[in-house]
Length: 125
Image (cartoon, rainbow, N blue to C red; front, side):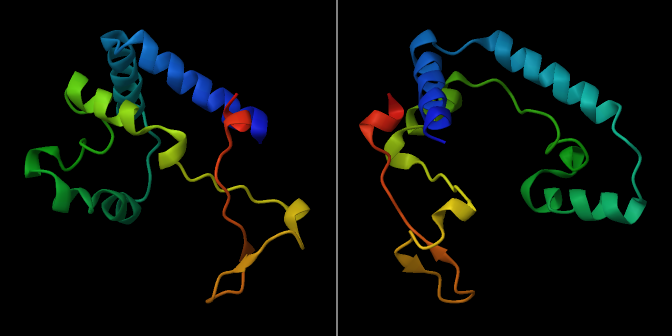
């Protein structure tokens, strides 16, 4: 887990240093569009259930596609998200039987044992 956390923040740092690349957005858009057009057929009722939340978020012309396809390219929005990706703004859920007996808190509704820890600088390195 520590290796993965370190690699994650190294990649975030690389993205922040290299700047915003439109070609990444264009490539993601092309992949999403292909996936949308060639998606497997599902039962109509399941399709309606999956897209009905779009009716609360998007205008009628976008109900069928908006959640599947990226919106317009915006360097400001991408930069805002990149700026928020920091060790101080992250929650990592690590679930393992190795933690049995090593936790210090209990969730009140289901009695699930858990701990909360800060990400250390050594973990990021």
